[in-house]
Image (tube, rainbow, N blue to C red; front, side, top):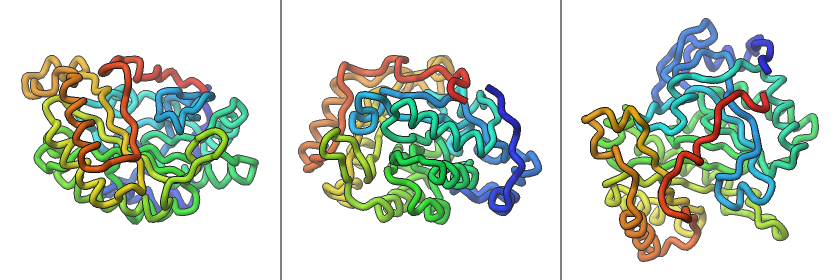
Amino acid sequence: MNQPTDTFSELTRSLLTSCTLCPRRCGANRVEGQLGACGMPAQLMAARAALHFWEEPCLSGTSGSGTVFFTGCNLGCVFCQNHDIAARRRGVPISVERLSRVYLELQEKGAHNINLVTPTHYLPQILESLEKAKKQGLTLPIVYNCGGYEEVSSLRMLEGLIDIYLPDLKYRSSNLSARLSHCPDYFEKASLALQEMYRQTGDPQFDDKSGLMKKGMIVRHLLLPGQAGEAKRILRWLHDTFGQHIYVSIMSQYTPMPWIKENPAYSDISRQVTEAEYDRVLRFAETIGIELGFRQEGGVATESFIPPFTGEGL
């Protein structure tokens, strides 16, 4: 499972010697082993590569989305459901060459797409791995699955390589984003990032036979307990900005992790979202005219949405 570590390319060195890939612009020399705001050095690490069936139907289809979960994250949300890889940095080191083969192996297993989860801090290595894999026969759509807190200049390096953007839009309130993700400028940066993503992909395109998405953008919003008003502000902005040119995925799967339940400072988010809260947000989306969207069926959260991070497929 463990792979040889990378010899850093000129591109990786140039971008990660003083890292400004994400809006935190921490300036860490990750090539020399300093940890960025993402918690990671330059060495590429991942925790899982497997077929995943819990994405939106037009991504998971019948055979699954070929997800690669990268270690580390530039957001650090206190409620993170992928805490083991985002904050505890669970994962194994892999080379760019190995990553390119992982994509091809997922394609051979029947994946409908290659789904890059929390990829931002490894952008230069991902660029190289995609270019290698495409030369070796990778033909699947590439999904960029991120928290929305992106730097526009970094996203522009991905133009022509990413087919589907799958960002979160977590917050409208700077107070809430500062408290829960330590970034008061979240909406300022994410709103610009989403507009750049749409510029690159344009309107959604689907395969006529399978119904699978080939190109476009799906914006996710995870409803937090007690934050229906925040969700409505986000949905209003999305509809005013993009109209019927993107899909919106309204998610009810929030899971209060043990450290949230144990910390009185987060008592307001120490429970699941109620069905009444979720229904209220869905009705608002319909009222303002959002037509292209996804909802989660079957009630609220279960931990089945959190996959095991055992190094599978790496």
